[in-house]
Image (cartoon, rainbow over all chains, first blue to last red; front, side, top):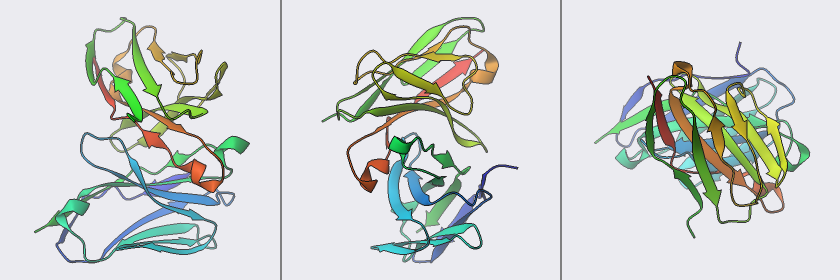
Length: 114
Length: 115
């Protein structure tokens, strides 16, 4: 079993829809949680970063962490065609300068149709 | 400010050939790493370095060598390419202080095919 599981999709939604992307994990020591967005033929770029449990909002994007359920989510409100990309969750137990290694999910491919 | 630069963008090798994937960053980042990305597998860490002269293995190090002689450069060497190494390779770096230093900056990737 992978440490981090993510439904690969693909997920197709109409423009304006609310999108929910999710990851589950097995290691209860994870405490740093991230979402990366990757456009086709590009490298991933950091979208959201959360420490421990709770919610974080940035514009149309909301990241949620539920450590009791070992479950993280990314919500996209009013989705746009420009949101079409692969979304990867990532997490680590320690900060990188403490020796932490970032573990990625498989990525979910999202397509937002006009 | 170029960020993380990877070369080449595309490469085709025959089984048994060797090659080096180049990675350079101009952000004075301490940490550099190499990932491979395969369908359904996400990004898997191959090797990483926390500073010049220091390297360590990630999840899938077999078949790859690295060295870090300068802060800027972190080349990845395939000594004898195998079809199982067909993948997209990403170099990434991070640095600075505080929790924002967890942000990884990725290059644009190298698509490698081994025939």
